[in-house]
Image (cartoon, rainbow, N blue to C red; front, side, top):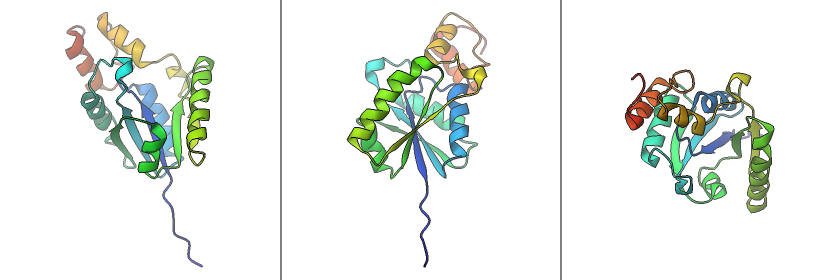
Length: 168
């Protein structure tokens, strides 16, 4: 009896405004568990992003181009509908601290209610990234601080271009 191999695909959603080294750490961990990971940049206008959806998707694409089984995409609307369209089996979410858990847990339960076939996988970044968030990176960059330890070089350059300060 021959069994067809089904590719295990995960969606790693987020606003990625901008993508950080913490996001990339979680992503690299996810690539060890799944055959393919799609980094899905959410439209999320309610969050009033610094970068446009296109800019965020381009920054993600550039940050992941060295990873062969990872692709960048963008979406709007319900995450579970997007996961279905992409024929994925799981959603990957990063947890930095206990404070992230309650919100993420509620989202995971709601997604399960909407589509019980889709699993949510919680992953923790390296301890060196547990304090890191896009919001903090933007704040540091806006105040002229050096964010080169927290984001890829092209993201740092984009932040400097937006805020007009710091080393390019």
